[in-house]
Image 1 (spheres, rainbow, N blue to C red):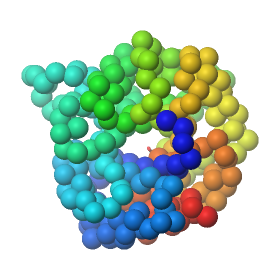
Image 2: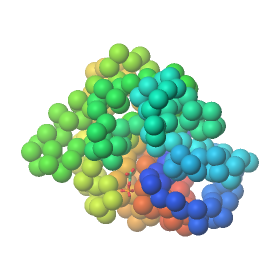
Image 3: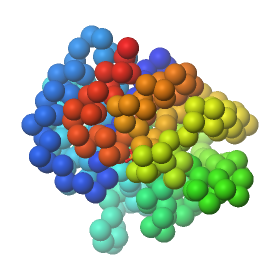
Image 4: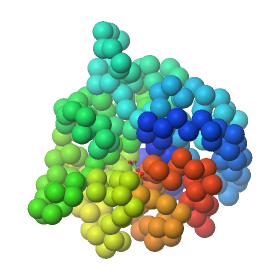
Length: 249
Ligand code: PGA
């Protein structure tokens, strides 16, 4: 997917956040400005708010994504699940897959592999989340964990486009702590090497985990990064706009 675009993705998780709907018009306006043409803004709300956000952003360049999809492509008796085909029908263009919060609810490496295949089949752009836990990090298992997550997710899958890797160390998510730039660069190089080993070296890499208007100043110095996945700070439109503005300076 590599081009010279930067991606900023709001992951609203299981937050209603409808109180911010009015303020989203400001993001819509920004996205239409010429200076923001190299920045792609994507909102991933809950399934039930996808259509509403698509309407809010109708006349803007902002795109909408889902936070997960079921691993089975066909419709069927899967109570409470939503697959890629149904997501696609809403007009959403992106889907987050393999977030640590879905992995921790029983999602397997095989599920993730199937989810990616079904999303790509529906022409959705996939944001594949990977990252080590604090225990992996303590035990020096980061490389092993990341390698396994990438290789199993992309096994028997010849996609080279419509895919992003979001490196999200689990210990950085919602904790207010982010890796040092040195640590981050080291792990990003590792991810690049793994991707290149499996013939997918052009995949854009994003970072996620406690990104906020302050620490973005140092994160943007890492040129390997093509964007950010923002949870908590994206729920506050002012903070999210602050981050967006720093990405174009
Ligand atoms: P956070 O969440 O920004 O609140 O750490 C990021 C994510 O989980 O994608």
